[in-house]
Amino acid sequence: MDFVKDWESKWDEALKLWSDYVKLTPAKFLFTASEEKAEGLTTSFAAIRLKDHRVLLSVNQIQHYKLEDFSLEILGHEIGHHVFCPGDLADQAKLIYITNLAMPRLNHLTPMIVNIYEDLFINDHLKRQNNLRMDEVYKRLGKQEDPFWNFYMRTYELLWALPSGTLTEGALSDQIQSDASLVSRMIRNYPNDWTKGMFDFASICFPYFFELNNQTVTNPIHSLLDTLDAGKGMTPPSGITDVEISSDLFPTEGITGSKRSLSPAEYSTICKSMGIDADISEITYRYYKDKALPYLVPFPNLITPGAKEEILEGNDLWDPGSPIDKINWLESTIKSPVIIPGYTTVEDVYGETTSNEIKLNPIDLDLFVDCSGSMPNPQNDLSYLTLAGAIIALSALKTGSSVRVTLWSGVKEFLVTDGFIKNEKEILKVLTGYFGGGTCFPLELLEDEYKEEPKRKRHILVISDDGIDTMFTQNYSRNARSIVKNALEKANGGGSMVLQLYEPNNNSVVNELQKSGWEIYPIKTWTDLIQFSKDFVERNYVRNQILR
Image (cartoon, rainbow, N blue to C red):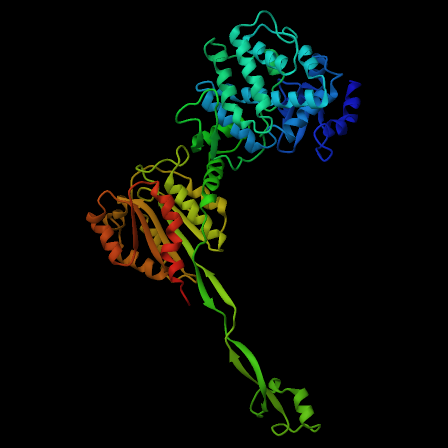
């Protein structure tokens, strides 16, 4: 194992292959099988970990493949994954998603396809820009008769102008020659924008595993897979809820040529493919936060003029009946060196002036979101109820408001935050839950919360459909109408209901609610909730600022 010290001494040189300014923690060498297992390095001789930007190296496997003399080639390659391709978790996630679309029913192979695609860019850069012996590394891994391996190796032969047979084995089919030619051009055409070529590359790879019923991975490829669990220990990435799909070779209507919006289920699959071990509530929280961010708007504030300020207007005679601490001793001494209370003592006289300061008083949000059986499950499909709630709740938090969220379905079936809070994660975790049961508005929460008028004004917002009529039609022990009316009055910040109504003009409960002071916003489809959430503040508050 003498080569380890030599490799350690080459670390800085390997960093400079990419830039003089790259700084990474030196590679970690693993000497035993138990160490490899603990770090998750089970098949390849090297791997990366994006959480701590670490390179992992298996000493035993490097020796097995006789790669001891290729320190710069291997270290430079692993560093390339950190600083070049993919560089970060978001880019890795986009490549995973694009490949999933191109390889239906073979998504278990997606991490491998993405890995070798990234390797093509990195190895070509190191070979052409730094003249490293990347082809010699593949020679040490050995030739294979496997069609996919030969297609992959033929691509390198074309990229580096190597004679056919240098890395490949046997006679190559016209299909392999054609595929390798296309991919070699792809690598040169998209050296800094590899997402543009990912769909086409995965589409080219697809037949090698589908038509030939070859869904196993050859041993040499196993040894190359160094990004399989790159996201292990990390939180779900941001910035990937919408991904642009490009294709020059396989344009497919409805898939390529535009941005595609990921569903929560697809987002969850991507996370698992990158080795991210997060529960569904964490993944769903990240998804809806990401979707909501572009739509955030200022939440309403109550504008209050500042308190009156005192201004010194002069002095007046101090009366002995006044508190002694009101005497201005300096002015009294200047008036007469002999102090005679009530004759020579004076006190300051103050007037009042209006302050120029304006105080903003955030209105808190009391949000009720219907998640009965007629609503989509936000953990599987994009729920516009959840998204609208996230947009409005996060907008409220930005202004300093506190938010209470209630997710409700059937009788006694509700999930609510711990009061009015400012913790966005807890708020969104409630919003992204799901019951899918019956429908029964939780009157008890309105009754308990609004027994007394809160210290700050609150706006009550309900998102539902025709099931809102359960406010009045359920079998509740006390007068439902009185409870709802009292809550609206005590909240003192208004109340809104955005409802998907099948017959907007014929719903007697909705008409009654509107007459009693609730603002009713009927919508036709759940997608209308996005526009509602953007217009919510403008229609209710911005045009009519409240002075208190």
